[in-house]
Amino acid sequence: NAGVTQTPKFRVLKTGQSMTLLCAQDMNHEYMYWYRQDPGMGLRLIHYSVGEGTTAKGEVPDGYNVSRLKKQNFLLGLESAAPSQTSVYFCASRRTGQGYYGYTFGSGTRLTVV
Amino acid sequence: AQKVTQAQTEISVVEKEDVTLDCVYETRDTTYYLFWYKQPPSGELVFLIRRNSFDEQNEISGRYSWNFQKSTSSFNFTITASQVVDSAVYFCALSGVIQGAQKLVFGQGTRLTINP
Image 1 (cartoon, each protein chain N blue to C red):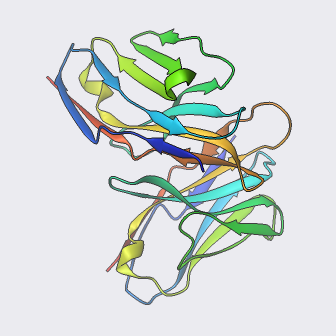
Image 2: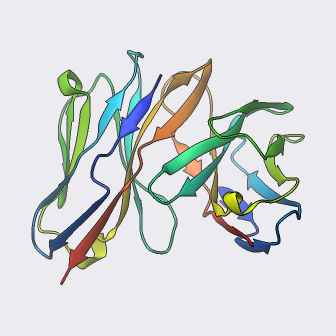
């Protein structure tokens, strides 16, 4: 089982360029999340989705857009990258329903904006 | 609002010492879950433990132990006889319903360095 796969793993962008990070999960999970990790600030939620075709803002959504056209994929877009978006990005997914279901994380994408 | 605070930004100890990582949380939910994750230098997040709000039993797993106290809203993590391989960033996290959806809120992380 692949679990949660993030592509790419590394990327360097110039200020003003655009890019899309892809998160794919093969567990049929309803919930998907995008986090960014910065030193001393832990992981902060950017956007999340509770199901196909739905997205919502998290704690730090500015400068990012997301789409969930297919249940298994959650895309994070940067329309005009800024140095402040240099970070490590993690995607996670989770099943819904009664009881406990754990979070499955991808291995992260390290993005540098110069 | 849900919040997790890890007041210790960095800890450095000598190998074989015991070390405790503190975690304090805030939530209005009666049902929630607490987690600890380890992030080694390779960067991935490694799940260590989950505890639900109705289970205050302490847990021991090898050299690791966790102390959950609802009265003080704390979920502390102790490593006994630390080893160099324990060097990592450790995150405490809280899962609950925020604005109608399940979300995971992380603390700031504690960077633990074990010196030989």
